[in-house]
Image: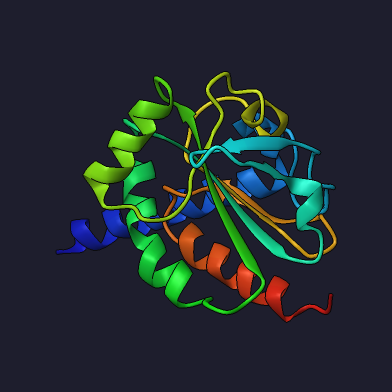
Length: 178
């Protein structure tokens, strides 16, 4: 029993050290922009054919989620969106843009969307041009942008506790004045 408790404590300490390192040395984890930075200017083609321009979203809180169609942690995070993002923040000034960066084109994303029952819009970044403004390396990656266009949260979604921290960042950003 003591071994189990010690192992659990070591895992918890190790996870907190990694999370702390991401906050203090984000560049070591492939982040190019982080908390306090201005969101890079970009536009992304949406699955419905429209183009989403980040500059036109000033005054709203934006959640960007960079994902891949074959990424299991990405899919797990996206499965939480309906209840924990869309229902929770319904009627608020929150714009959610999952951006698929690893795919084989529009048809691949449509199949992915249908197969997983996702009824929300997706952006498509086939060449990784948008993602390269934010990070290099693995996915999933979340970014919360406040009403003024500043990044208030950044992080991978697969680390324990990051989902809750991200939700808190969204709540705080929504509370701020326009």
